[in-house]
Image (cartoon, rainbow, N blue to C red; front, side, top):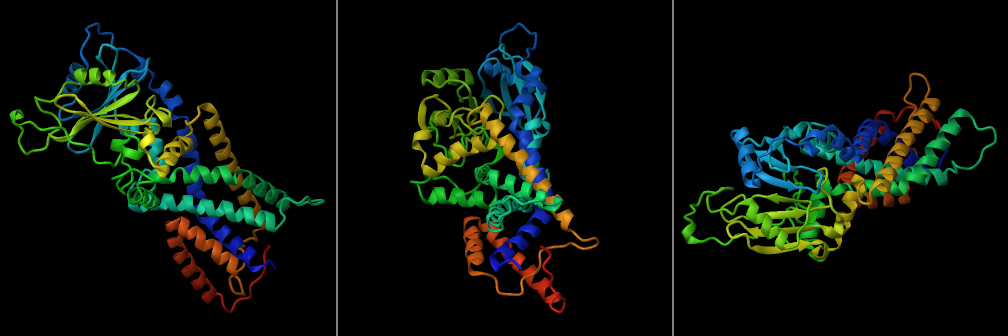
Length: 451
């Protein structure tokens, strides 16, 4: 019979793996796909990204925007993404129902083509990875919960590997012992990098994402002043993580503009984009960057360079992140927030998110993340085989319930993990209830150690 701490970890490890493995496989495979979304999209959408319209007439950027809006009745341009050569300019158009279109302009600002953002390669994988195509708070919490339990699986597996001396060489090891050894060896190797990958993805999560933003807001030295607690939303994805939820400054309002009280993102007094781009260049801002239109009569043009946009060709180094504000009427530069202004927490995730996405330091980052993800799938495979080899026909062959009290070290570790990952901690209440119910149902049945 194993000691109480080992047995407790073994039982929770088994049931956690049993229930969340399908979700972990889905998240891992979609994550692998997302690692290479820029490479895939460069080929998949080559005509849009790099093609031309074969029209020789040269338009201004504002005339190109007007043509795009005329082609899509009811849609208004909300963002302009200017990328390095040889990428085309990309417009984001939105309507009152929240639908969007991407429109691509060539060097002459003529329309090359358009996309429905919902079905682009990157957005499909992002939707699968973050919300399983379903979306909603419950599903977002479920994905986050799976990530939290994955951390528990890795850490509990590491404990059992060394406590049970699984890696110790055994003469004439049977098939189950060999499978178990591979499961433990791969799990040990990837524990640290996998935990890092999971934690650097948590800023996008629903529950801990709110917690992180609240901590950043309440502690300016760790985050960014006025950073709100809501997690980032996809419609502001071109703005850096650290400033997405900040309240932008207001443009100066002049009485002779004749503006009413109604909110609007366009008006006849608004500066044209071509003139704004002259101001952008005058301030030493280089491509790639995105321009977000004002959303009200006292709003501002927001120009952003970010390290975690999720847009092919737009990401920059964390050190180059910046969010700049320009008056929508005069084009005057108002203010700027860059990497040096971030608190410790914001700086950490400014590096962590592109590390998670696999583009912080180019192909080596992608390769490392790929190897870790493939190894994680290997851990799942060898763990499943180990269970099948010990499973008795017609039985679940789960680790036995404990006849003695739960050990203090186990409780301490579980509580610490619950504090670090609040959603995991809340789920433990349900686990404890289920365990109690199962023990009550089986109290008269003999308990066998099935190690």
